[in-house]
Image 1 (cartoon, rainbow, N blue to C red):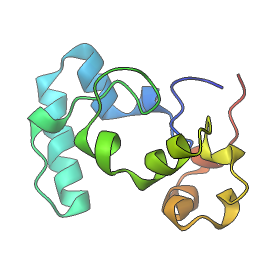
Image 2: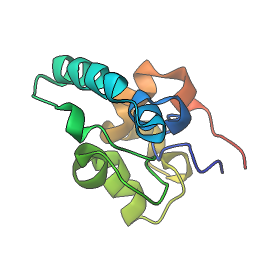
Image 3: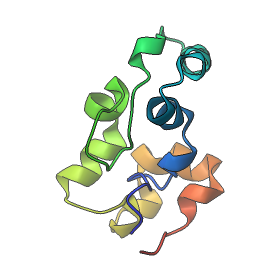
Image 4: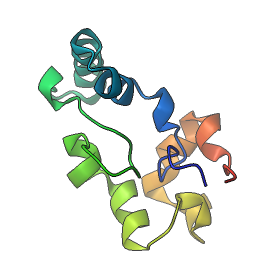
Length: 110
């Protein structure tokens, strides 16, 4: 499995938080923080936008590191992705991602 595919199936290489981290792009961090603050209804600051990827060693956003129920569940079950879980199609944690992202519904191959 591709290491940049998150447990939920999203591609971390396309994530603006990861792109900002890899390129040390403070302007992009600021844009991501504003967008995520609006989408989530909470204050997210540019200094919170540091992430190398969900399944990659390295820095994570606070949400990804400590709060994401999808990441916690899959890692706890020692699964490479949610797609390997028997409960995947009925999982409430994963539901919104699968409903809104065709990309996440694909099962990436190694």
